[in-house]
Image (cartoon, rainbow, N blue to C red; front, side, top):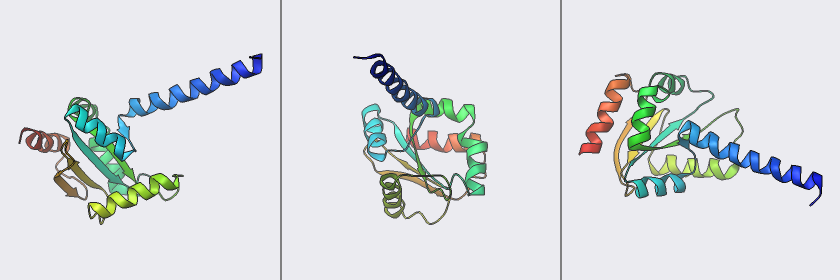
Length: 150
């Protein structure tokens, strides 16, 4: 293999590893099938966040006040598989992901943003909250814990 081929191979490997790391770093997936598989294999709840990440003010507020907080991230790492179901207006999104997200919104009858849907490891819906969760971070985690403990 020539020098240029080796450099190209190394660069490709770095990009692939970076993409995988970024996914693991954020904790949020965007592939529903993969998220379902992880939830079932780990016996965790699957939390779907239906959001308009680049335009929805209430979605941004929920993200800032709850979903991006270290206390939630710590709880989620141990108890949840996280799936972002995004409906951006200006951020690019591939057609396959857009189709998946539209199908999920139809399946769970999402009529506005944000909407949180929680599924058990078998894929059955155990909770849905439409709109901004105004009770705060502690109450959000308490609700999830109540669901988890049955």
